[in-house]
Image (cartoon, rainbow, N blue to C red; front, side, top):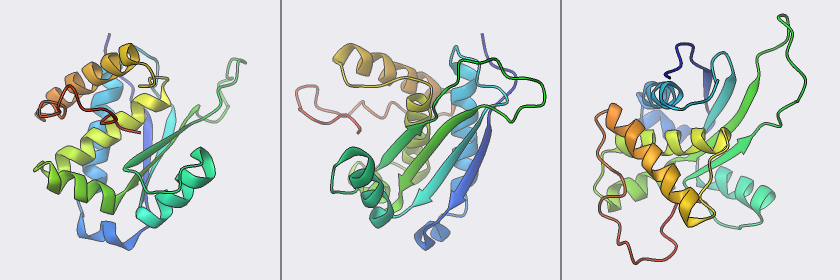
Length: 175
């Protein structure tokens, strides 16, 4: 059942390189809205933040949180969920934060000959799905997550981002 109430998505531009992409916030808002409408989870009136950073910023996050000293395209930081029911005057439920690195994302889009907006949409959807509990650590989980990503992106008119992937290639899944 589609969600009629969407999460509140705040987009924070923290790296100057994103100024070259004035539509980035609108692209992210559309992608998150499509994902929220598609998933079978109550994400309405929850909040999330998307930080648009550069490779240096995401490299620091990747090192501090995952112990990996290199930039990556997207990182997700799900918020801890409380078990107590929220009262009417409580602050909105936090889903978490997503960070997207400009240079890595741009390089991937160029190498894969994908429109920048399509790849940005894919990374926003991918990050959002991590916030609500999806992962790709196991092959079955990865397949389910990728299938859902494809469904969401198709609603946005974006072709399957995995269509050209070599099915025998190791390590080609997103971080």
